[in-house]
Image 1: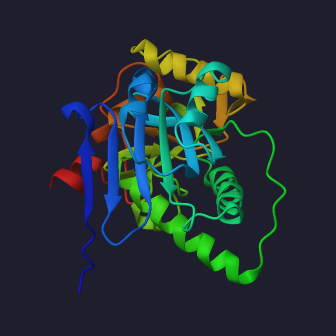
Image 2: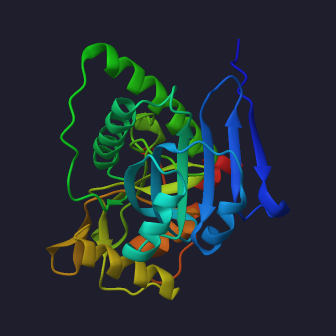
Length: 275
């Protein structure tokens, strides 16, 4: 029997792109989604818990590209400090609960666990430069993993996957492009993820400038490195809204991703997903 999950979402001011308050049924945790441009408005929301962890995220073309994990005992006031000191982020997602649910030990452990998992995912650039020196015992670890499982679920429901894109992908779900000697690998699950280790053809500029800008930002962060002449290798996985966007990023120019990406048997995405 399939498990039914229910998440209620309150759209503050009735704006689906604005501040959101989300609650999962039978959970003591509240999720708060705050676009940076609306940070001043979030203070009007009453009775929000103040303890928990949060993600500052930078998304481009609808995909999460950079992330910072932190903890708070001040609720949304912690974001005010980051608004002054950190430039990269455009949205914050907070996971907060009452003091009797989120002890100081638990939020410290969750922060460390979140940073470790973010680095292991190879999905995005992690802005944390210092890993918290915090140790938990075996019984605490079970609690942390259970809470983080809920955090991953809610983040995924919001469109931001935290786990490695290859975690749940089988070999026959992998997709490839081999054009002009460039070999790149991807996974398609509503969005298209170009996997770390893929080679990018830097000899051809993408027709859409945003993919050129993305290439440069990855070079600047050390996540796209020269491997052989004009062939550069990704050191992290990168997510795109569409297969065509992914193909344009990898190959340059303008491409139809539905015919470009193929499985190990040579069948195109159009054949696989469109019949």
